[in-house]
Image (cartoon, rainbow, N blue to C red; front, side, top):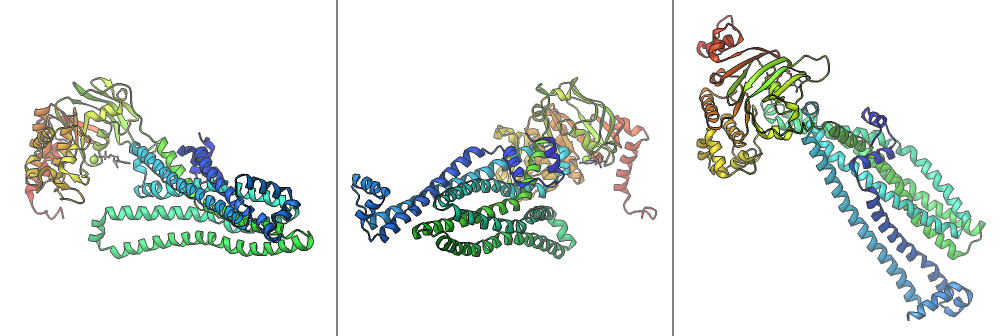
Length: 627
Ligand code: ADP
Ligand code: MG
């Protein structure tokens, strides 16, 4: 687990060293680092070993050529040659220029083969890792508390679990390949030290100077990385928000402005992306010429000052030639990890917040359905931080089973908030809610939600057929049940008129339904759920009088046919007159309750609002005073 201190540092945007970010990312994603690193580095070392052997063959080959291909002379001179020739003889291979060169060639081939294994393993693991982290993040976000969702921006979330996750994940693979590179480096250094300690020391000094020179250049990467991440977030947020309200953009004629803003956002991003890539591109510009210079110096030091044999010098120079690109690669890797440091930070943050904001799962009891009543006792709720206004202030009321309870009141009075408490979408800050006398929190969230169906104000219709929509969340119901639900919800008639009936595609790629049709279709989905409590949040708002009438009749029919308890938030009063009980909410208080007839007798908000609505319909043009 991560210490509290680190969490605070990360969340407050504090700059952790990049290696700690990488370690944290590994911890938090549960990446099996050791296993995967072992395989990748192992394959890499195998390929290096063959490469090294291929190059090491240069030594005997040069000796062989210098000796004028005279095997006997070579054997007389060196033990190594004698053993080489003996073992070659025992397996029946003649030692000549052809076999020596072939051996070197085969080693190089093996090197390539192992490299291929390594690359393909790495590519597959990287993709798999992205998938794991993305699925885990999505899973967590599906179970996120509503209070967190209120505060999060969709665009940033989308960016974080796509772009940032895969950039952050790439850091881990860069680290793994760096381990391989460092080991490779050590291997070459080992060879070089055996050839000449002094020459190796000279090389080390020159390499250190280079590293020093480049560190300054790379230190900017972490800053730019932060900027890139925030540019990405703004860009995706912008896109998500604008595409969601295309209608508004078009009707306001702001296309040109929006286009400009997008252009600017992309420019901002590009500018940073370019400068960070330029840093990587500059590394070879510095390293390559330095490398040539170093080799020339080595030649001079080796021959003139140290008086080394020419074949050793060639070996040493060859090793240096191989070593420098590795050194360069290590620096580029470091630079790349720096350049995704912000993605690491963002991903860690995102996963942390998601993990902390998971919904509670509720108690152990299984909710089997409402038999008697739902009771609110002095329930209060507020959004956001302490000292904010109460959205629900000491609410006490009873919702009897098998009846229709209407909830009315001006907008902002707390109606939607109140019903969010039932399926545990939100938790009250005071008071208690009981189902048949048992506190809500004793039931498991899952069992409560199974038994509570919800029809939102503007139902979301995914891209699917009518039948699939009714089946959403009720995967096991039969076609008969679907038709029955559609009939109860008064949707059967219009579904029959659609071109393909129940198979008609609706939503973005299909037929667009009218508001009233969508409502009744969604009502059918809720009815098909066979739940015990049916909640509707202002279902009839935006419907014309005719559609409203349809809807009211459908509700009464549903109640009588299924015995379900209905809670109906109503805007228009004509849907609510049929309710068995009407509760009037104002500013988070219950102002009054009773039947329509009872409430109409009082001179309170309900009677006034009811009369006003009906008066408005009848009174026609505004009076002078109203204008
Ligand atoms: P109604 O459904 O009766 O119109 P709501 O329950 O939506 O009223 O809102 C009650 C109060 O809570 C209002 O003052 C509203 O501004 C506030 N509110 C509603 N939703 C949120 C939210 N997600 N975050 C903060 N405040 C909210
Ligand atoms: Mg509302």
